[in-house]
Length: 191
Image (tube, rainbow, N blue to C red; front, top):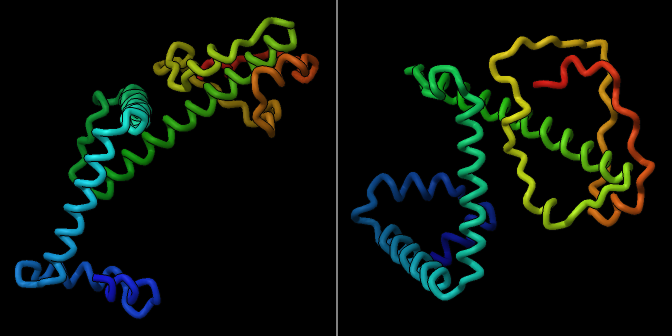
């Protein structure tokens, strides 16, 4: 196993060749059995670490929750046919999923920009911005999105510039005059 790993690292053999070889005649290959046992050891060590570390369990739970929230949001975005992929061609299914994720990410970006501007507006008005409240904000908001509405795209409209740096709540409190005035015509504000 070490020889195989060193050969891959040195570039003498590609990982795809090893994987193909292991898949071809895996039942008779000693290297296959060695890697399988190594995988079992690695998995056992991880499970022991998972069981013994509360911090690791919290970290994994938080990451899983974020992933599940995104999946739920993406499903909400894919309102046509209840988010079901009805296409039978694999490449078309992938396109539908990628397009759905693209739209979901664009809506998340819009939400974050709107939330950032609202927070900067609060700071400009002298309202307190609480760190705990900021930590509980989520980009997966749906209340401000009009899924079934009419959309007017004004390509001549120049959007306000995005903030180039991320500031903490304390920085927002100390810089109250940095937000530009909002535009009067917000006809495309509802996404």
